[in-house]
Each structure stands twice: as C-alpha cells, then as structure tokens.
Length: 188
Image 1 (tube, rainbow, N blue to C red):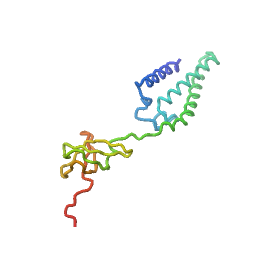
Image 2 (cartoon, rainbow, N blue to C red):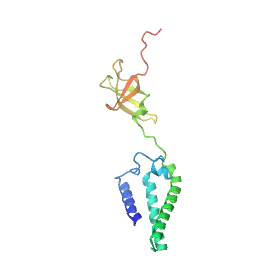
Image 3 (cartoon, rainbow, N blue to C red):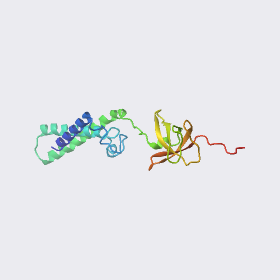
C-alpha cells in the first residue's frame, strides 16, 4: 500500500515530463546530478533524482507485490520484514542501475556571469560611460553574448575597441570594463 501511492506519484510525474510540463531534473533542486546531496550520500547520486527515486520506488513496489503474493499476509513481522527487504533490494537494484547511467548524465558546469570576469570584450555601442554601454563577449565554449557594460569615466571607450571585463554589479546587472590596453601616459 505504501509503495502503491508512491508509484502513482511517479507515474504522474513521468506523464508530466513526457507532456513537457516538467523537466527530468525537476526534483534535483540545487544538488544537480553531481552525486552530492542525500541521494549521493546513499550511493544513488550521479543521475537525476527523479530517475533514482523512480527506479527505487518501482522496484520496491514490485518487491512488496511479489513478496505479498508469495508469503501472504501472515502477520505484522512478516509485513515489516517484507517492507524492509523490498527497500534494501530496491536500493541495491537502483545503485547497480545508477552506475552505468552516470555516464549519460555528466557533471555540467552551468554558465554564470562570473565566467566573463577577466575576459576581453568588444564594445558595440558608440560610447561607454557610467550609465550606458554594451559589449560583445565570447565565452569559453565559443558562444557570444551581448552584455551591459559600464566604466568609471576615465577612459574613452567607443564601438569596435576591446575592453577588459574586471567586475560585475549584481544590483545593476552590468559589468565594469576598462581598455584592454591602457593608454601610455608619459612612458620613458
């Protein structure tokens, strides 16, 4: 009975995934598929939580179903033993299945704004000052992004010039830039 309700939830979840209402990783939260978190602690990490939990629940349900048919309902101790045995067998089966599946779910480092810090960008607006400016920056994977940039006002940055991204303002959601090559003031 316990696993029947859980299996109904699992089937409903996968129907929503197939219909496009949810993603496969909807249950992962911040842990991701990198093996950290509660499932990683019990050896079920490395795959999305929805996959691990679905297999665990389905195998446990099947184990209690078969066990009840074979052993019958002869008492409380048999029911507790059957439930415990089904959970252990389900955990082992899920762990064995998760091992080969891990290669299909590699650890992905999601891009973040901090990845642009230290990168050279190309100014795309006629000017960059303390309140206005845009630049194109290329990420390590080869993709480019048009980002909002600002500068303190001491440099003359114009379209086509290169600049260095050195800081990010999360409140204003823009990057601070400076020329990638500083002007030579009185070099000897």
